[in-house]
Length: 337
Image 1 (cartoon, rainbow, N blue to C red):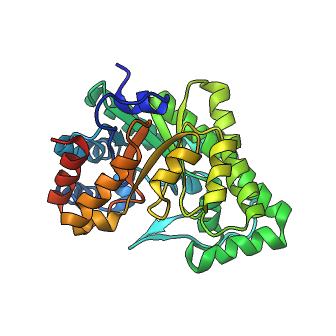
Image 2: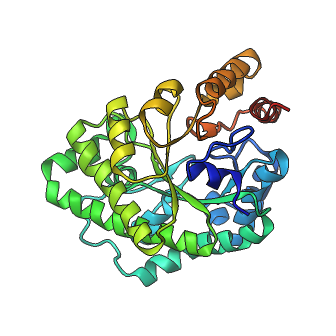
């Protein structure tokens, strides 16, 4: 069955409400997720356990009947596959990388580290109704490079300085990431994913030249690599925080089927100017607030996207403090029930 989300990504207008899912929908706002994570022992333990990862992937579908499930994993699994150690406490911890020379290039080693993701996808697809899309994902090269160079705080200073001071060396890191991310997403499709999303969480605030070289060009290369193997692959890009001009460039130059936008972008502008399927962009804090703030925000988005191919989502990941009843209300508002 050609489900609602895939139909919209193919450019078709839905006859009824738009498809709906939420970034980080399998997460800490759900008591069943917290229980499963405790069973796994740690966040990384949960990511590495295909059975439990499949379980938390399905939990929000059972509760809210979303139109898509997104496999439970983390963008930094690619960093780990490349041989750079990652640990998690309250957040990710990585030592600062200064050279790409020692990163793992053997695809067999990548596959060994990333295998739990593919197993989780393979377990989840037959447990999911045929009309529900299963989404895989990966971090974009720029965002992964930001984490590897020293983290995303302070305007991604370490990555930007590396890019300015050693352009060729930084480009080597980006190229290695393009290769691994491309293969990771291809393997996710082969394991059962119906669509994938490329998260460029640290794309905002870059000068145009850096945005072109390290956001647009690597994403275009990944899309090309995937479609060389899988011509019909459905791909969503999320260059969070990109300015309006850069969003237009990303939409026109990368080849993605859909572009996810953050809450800073006017939805009416996006659906008229981006020339591709738009996904977004409810403020996660409006969902936390609920009430009139949530109702007004949802109505504004639905009004702006009426008669357009559109996927309803948040403008970033759902916050752990989000009340479950507000998510139920969101579903009701979007679907008009």
